[in-house]
Length: 637
Image (tube, rainbow, N blue to C red; front, side, top):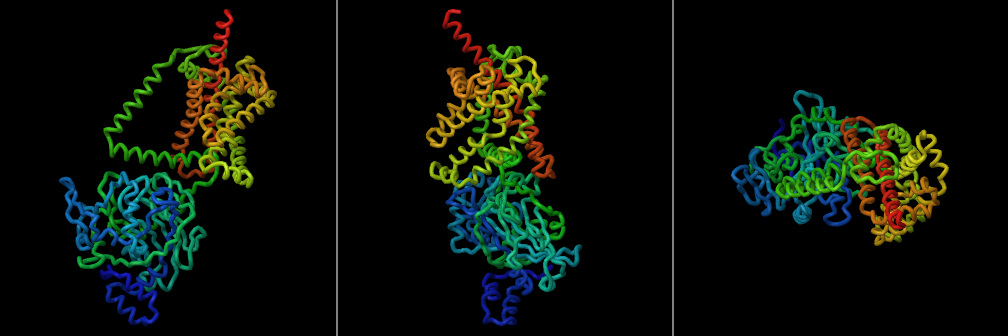
C-alpha cells in the first residue's frame, strides 16, 4: 500500500494554476501533503467532465437538482447527526467532524434532515444551502491489485447529497475508473489509457479508450450522470435496466445538459491519522439515514469491492447498455411503461413501508369495491348467437371468452395480424404530424404540452383502436350473415369502407375539436363513448357515416356508463395483457434487441385485440335488444 495522507485543494491549485512556482517547489509542497506528485498529475490530466440533466425549475424531479460535491457539506454541519444502531438509534454526535467519523464501524450512520422515503423538496433546498460556497468535487484514487500486476486503475469517486430514484436514500457514492497497462502513476503518465469503466448501480459499463461511444475533451472523459440515480453513462439517452447490475428501472441522461468541471481531490489508500482532513475515509458506517433494503444509506468508497480490487471490478462490467429508442411503436410504449411500472412499484413499496396501516385500509376498500361490482352482474352461461339478445355484463364477458376459444376467435386473431402493418403506419403518421411546421405552430398556439400529446393521440389513433375497429366490423359481418370465412368478412368490411371511413373521420373530428380546447375534454370523452357502435351500425344497419353515429348515440342513450365501463374494460384487457406479457419478455429475454421485442409485442396485441372486439360486439347486440324491446312496448306490441 502507498503511504497515507491527503491532498488539500489549495495544493492542487498550486500545481495547476500557479505558474510562478517552479516544478521542484510544487513537488515539495505536494510531498509535504503526503501524496505522490505523479498521482496528482495523473488525476488532474484525466479529470472527468460531468453532464447533468437540466432542471427547469426548483423541485422539478425530471431534472437533476444535485451535483457531485465535497463531503465537507455534511461534516461539522449542525444539521447533521451521527447515530449508532440500536436502542432507538441514539445520537452520538451533533455536527460530526472528520475526526468523529474516523474508525467508526458498520453500526454507525449519518442522518440528514428530512425523511429519505418522503423527500419532498427538503433535500434539494438543504443541498443548495450547504453547497452555496462549495465547488463541485470529484475524489481521485490511484489503485492497483496485487494479483494483477502491470495494471493500474485511476478511480474517480463522486459524492451526492441525495439519491432521488426508485431506491431513494440519503447520500450516494458513484464514479468511473480508467484502466492503464502500468505499474505506477508515473508509468501511466508515459502511456495512454486502455479502457474506461462507468459505474451504474451494482455494475457498470466499459469501453475501449478509443471507442466511438466515449466522448472526450482531450484526455478528459465526458460522463453523463443519470437524473436522480447518478449512474454514469457514455451518452445522452434513456437507458433500460432489468437486473441488479443494470439497475431495475430506467436511467435518464437525456438533454439538455449542464456541464460541470469538478475540482479534484486525491485520496490515499488509507488514513491512519484522525486529525487528517480526510479522516472520514476511515468511516465504515453509512453515509445516510438507516432504512431497509435498497433504501439504506450507502457505505463509503473504501468499503466498496472496487476500491481494493479495481481490475476484477472492471472485468465484470458490461460492454453496452440498452438504449430506449425514441418512437411510438408498441415495444417502445411497453418499455416506457416498464419504467413507469417500476417507479410506481417503488412508490408503492415506500407507501407500504411508511404507512402499513393505511395501505391495509386501501387494499380492503379496493377488494370490497371489486367484490361489489362482481356481485352486481350475472355470470350464468348464455348463448353466443343470435347476436341481438339481452345479456348481463358478466354474461357478455363469459360469452366473449367462449367465442374467443372457438373458430371465431381464431379467425379474428388472423384479422388481428393487421396490427403489424397498422403499427408501422401509426408510427409514420405520428412522425409526420410532429414534423409538420403548420401543425406544430397551431398546436403551440392552441394548447400546452399535455394538450399536444392528447391531440397527437387522436390524430394518429392507437394501433389497438384501429385493429379493434376492423376486427369488430368483421365479426359483425360474420355473425349477422351466418358462417363466413375471414376473407368474406374482410370483403364485407371493404364493401362498406366509405361509410366506415366517413363515420370514423367525422367522429374523430368532433372529438378532436372538443379536446383541443382543453375545457371541452369532458364532452370529447362523452362523444367518444357515444360513438362506440359506429362499426356495427354501418355493417348491420347499412347506414352512412353520419346516420351510423346517430344510431350509435341512440343505442347508448341511457347506457353511457355501462358502455363506457365495457369500452374501458375491453381496451384495458388488451393493454394489461400486452403489458404483462411484454414486461415478462422484457425481463426474461434481456438480450433480445428492441426491434424484435416490438415485433413480439405486436403479435401479443394481435392475439388479444379480438377479445376486446368480441366483447364490444356482444354489447352492441345487447343494446339493440334493449332498444327494440322498449320500442315494442311503446307501440303496444
